[in-house]
Structures are given as C-alpha cells and as structure tokens.
Image 1 (cartoon, rainbow, N blue to C red):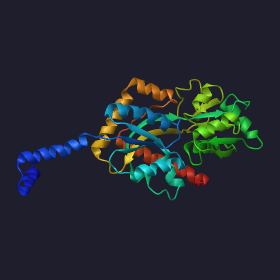
Image 2: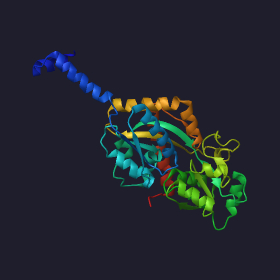
Image 3: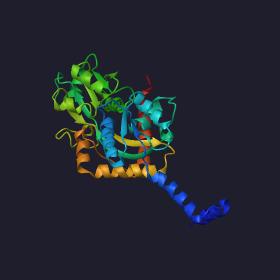
Length: 329
C-alpha cells in the first residue's frame, strides 16, 4: 500500500483490507470499458472512405468488446456536424468520430465560426489508413491520358465543369491545386458528398473530377475513365496509371482517415481503442478489405508523428486556401 493510501486508511478509520477492495473496484471500472454500446459518428455519407473504415472497425469492435457499436452517418459542412457532435459529447469513450484530415486541416481555415475547435476539442485515437485520389473523366471526352486531357481542356470553350464532393473538401482543393499547376481554367460544381459528384459525372452533368472510394466502382464498371492518381507515387490499386506528379513534380494529395474522441477521454480508454486498431490493421483480412474499398492502406502513425503531420497539413492547406481566397458557402 502506498503512503497516500495508508494516510487515507488512517484518516477515515477503515480497515486496510476494505480500502484495498474499494481501490481495486475503482481501478476495475476503467478496465471494464466498454460496458455499454458505443456510438460511432461518421463525417461522410455512406460509401466514402471514412464510412467504409468505420463500418469495418465497428464490426471488429463489436466482436472484441462484446458491446454493440452503432454507426451514424452525419455528413455536412466538411465534417463539422459530426465533429461538433462528438466534441460536445461526454469524454468517456462512448461517442467516437471517424473522420478524415480535412476536418482538422481545412475546415478551420474556411469556417470562421465552427462552434468548436477540432484541433483542440478532439483527440486522435489513431490514424488508420491513407488513400490516394484518382483523376477521372466522363468517357464522352475524347481523351485517354492526362496529357491529352490537358491539351483538350486548354481549348475547351466554355471551360470544362468539374465536380467535387463540396466546396472546401480535399477533392475541391486537389483540383484547385491541379489548376494552379497546369494553368487550366475549369468551373467548379460542388455536390453534397462524393456520391453526388460521382452520380453527376456518370450522368455527364460534369466531365472531370478528383475523388476517392465513391469513384472506384464507376471506374471499374467503365462508366468513368481514370487518367491519373494524386499521390506522390503511382497507386497499387490502379496499375499502369501515372501519378499527376509525373507531369507536375511535387503535386501530391492524399487523404488519411482516423478515429477521434472528445478531448479529456481517459488515457486508458484511448490505449484500449488504439490497441484494438493495431490488431485490426495487423489482420490480413482487414487489410484486404481496406484495399478493396478504394486502395486504402494501413497508416498508423505514432502519436507524435501524427501530431506533426496534422500541423503540416494545417499549414499547407491554409496557404492554398488563402491563395484562392476560399470561403465557406
């Protein structure tokens, strides 16, 4: 028994054995997490990368914890709606957020009054996976390569319309970065989520886009044509496709997805969740399901490395947003 515990025994006059039982019970309360259902908020609509990962992880947590994990998609405002709901929930580990990095690196720059500060009010449990985007066009365009697209787009009158998952999303900024590097003039048409953008592309309402998991089924079915990927190197899930960086060196846009909890969540709860994510990512079946969901690959950084990466992304996107004077709609 520690000095502090002995002092407590003398002060309250309880038998040492009884105090030790009370202390053990208090310690065991945290070890029993979770003892009731967990709510997992997803910042995107069904079909996006956070949704795919969230549902896989919810199934895993349910099996491992013996408690149901209830998934709730709350899309809107670039993740702000889901983020605020979790940030303002009790910090007890029973309300969690599956989000991608845009909530932390982009939203604070374009939403002056968010109602919460994601970088202060949410704590990362773990980054989980990273995904490159793909540059795709409607097959009606007479182009088969990125070089042909650039040549065609330079001559297009009126300028080609490009779809995004919404103003201020990474898909939007990825295309704006491409425009700045290529000097092309294209018209932005924002939709509510990646699924809306993909539907518009297939219908021919827009002719070019950059996106993630929601585009892959359309590309595989031949309803869209992929021209390039946006990561720093070629993507394994699109063998033979060049990276945009091969045309414009230094161009690189990837999205990472992670699990977050309200700031103040007990450290042992964070540790428990992080340990389960580590085991999830070590499982070959889980890794294959991530890959099949749009080329997502495990991306679990150490806490210090994740914090540094988030700071870099915050600064990088802030600079781009200021350069195009982007404001929330």
